[in-house]
Length: 75
Image (tube, rainbow, N blue to C red; front, side, top):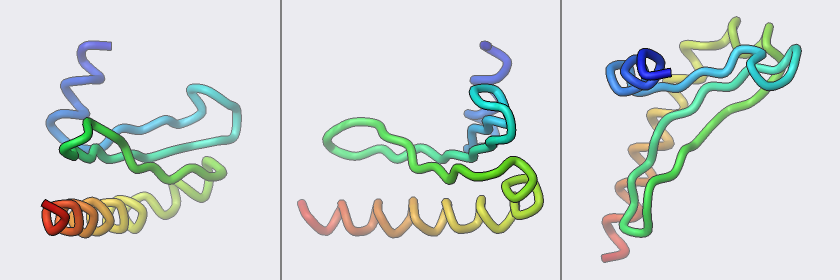
């Protein structure tokens, strides 16, 4: 588990490829807010998540940036 946590820190993404449910995959990115730490994730059929992994990661990063920007403007 410690190795997996280090990989998440290094890469910035967490993955779930059929770890919790057969046929389901997920990719997540962290979001730090003044209210705490959260995650934004995309969940779907494993074949679709693997096939679109780079697109999903790019979309998650864009969402992370937009949310961080919006949350900073609330202060």
